[in-house]
Amino acid sequence: MHYYGTSAVNEDGHLEIGGVDTLQLVEKFGTPVYVYDVALIRERARGFKETFERMGITAQVAYASKAFSTIAMVQLANEEGLSLDVVSGGELYTAIAANFPMERIHFHGNNKSKEELEMAIEYNIGCIVVDNFYELGLLQELCEKKQVKMKILLRVTPGIEAHTHDYILTGQEDSKFGFDLQNGQAEEALLKGMDSSYLEVLGLHCHIGSQIFDTTGFVLAAQKIIERLDEWKKRHQFTTKVLNLGGGFGIRYTSEDQPIQPSEYVEVIIKEVQNKAAQYNMEMPEIWIEPGRSLVGDAGTTLYKIGSRKNVPNVRNYLAIDGGMSDNIRPSLYQAKYEAVLANKPLQKADEVVSIAGKCCESGDMLIWDLPLPKTNDEDILAVFCTGAYGYSMANNYNRIPRPPVVFVENQKATLVVKRESYEDLIKLDLPLKETVTLKN
Ligand SMILES: Cc1ncc(COP(=O)(O)O)c(C=O)c1O
Image 1 (tube, rainbow, N blue to C red):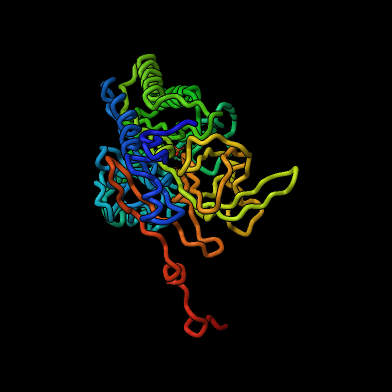
Image 2: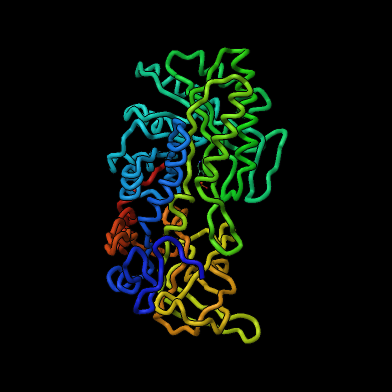
């Protein structure tokens, strides 16, 4: 079994993370519970940052907080000197509550509302990644009204789509995000931005996909963008200060995944941008990236209690846990795969193959298919690895199941950073029938 970061088997034969016995975590915080290995998050952050520093490149590594946004996580990102990518008023609000430096916040999204843009202007955030013409017009109008100048990046679609190992070069990019680089829309957006006294176009942004295992897609994207920037320099005297190549760096969920190290992605990206910049006699831009999953994904482990079992002879053994698609929707949403062990006996030999079912009323609520495990008893603890990204942040209250707490572990210490939702929390926004406001014709 592959263990991540500080995860290991301790003297008592239990899984420990950050030097803390997972069974003690279960005793104190109950199940299900998300556990984050803080040392591993720090290691990943440093892996990205130090490569830029070592290669003498001015850079920002922005944590894509959609992967896992809570006050403590945003504070940890700040401790590690990361910037922050937010995609909604809610993620921005979390950053404000965490006291995150506003100048290192980048605001994304394909349909930012007027209120969200006003909030970004009011807090004077570092930059807005403008996605479309509607937003460009709205932002210009709001900045003019407030008489402020806002830094922007233009999100472009370079015509490259990455799906883990495959790259699709598309002529006309069919995406809801960004300005198309090939059909003239990106250039039109650039001219509009350059024309405005209230906007400063810092440069371009692209994000080619997620869970990408090699560097080809990033290299292709950098090439395409820099070629276009060269044209724009000649035609419009535009010099880019920033080139943001997004996130999407792959991680290991199961033995099928073989990602490269953060430093390797960064080195290849830097070298390509340097080569192209030299080829076109262009000033080296700052390079920004936006890792989400690769900063927090493998640092998260979810602990569940095993409950009911259903054996269908010669077909399948179902083993149910006390969570499921309400705390990890990725398997039902896009067949994501995970590995798991029994936290109370991780080294015990597997003697059966089971499929792990969630407790939600959906046949599709299956967490792991065909997992080899030792014979289990109810109350055994299942530790599912690599649940740190898009787990808690996509958690929901389907079947009115309260969301689990989040615990950070580091140096033998456990800290509760998100409380378990209670039944009272679940109904706190509900209004009884007689108090609801009814609209009459
Ligand atoms: C614009 C942008 N940046 C960064 C990310 C983070 O991607 P990942 O978590 O795969 O690194 C995403 C993910 O959807 C994204 O849309």
